[in-house]
Length: 166
Image (cartoon, rainbow, N blue to C red; front, side, top):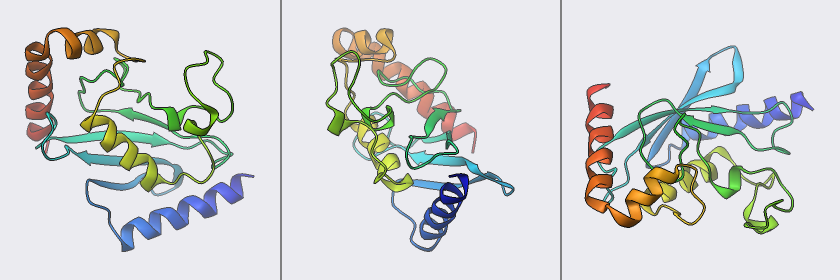
């Protein structure tokens, strides 16, 4: 099973190197480990995150693509769909099948057709439009809904800090 994952990840990395996608860059953390990727997301234009360069680690399971990777921001991130430890919480990164809590449809969750590119584009979309109905960070979601000015200030700090880390 791991050999299938290795071949698929090598192909996806090669494709991204040959044909970069606007909005993010990706590479290996360590050339000897195809299962750990460094990704940098460029804050999407016309959003609060514009101008930021947010680093994350994408970790793939041995049985990829049958199970989803995890994505964890290593840059500071203030967002309703990002846990305080940086883990990204979006439907396509949830295990395949029915949602035990009944919130998501099986069709919204992980399927093996997803690629690094589709995952990263979903995260960029998440930055553009938070889902505050099912938050990973309840405090950020509450600020997003009730104290937008405070939310914007915290995001601005994250953007500035990400620029200083370049």
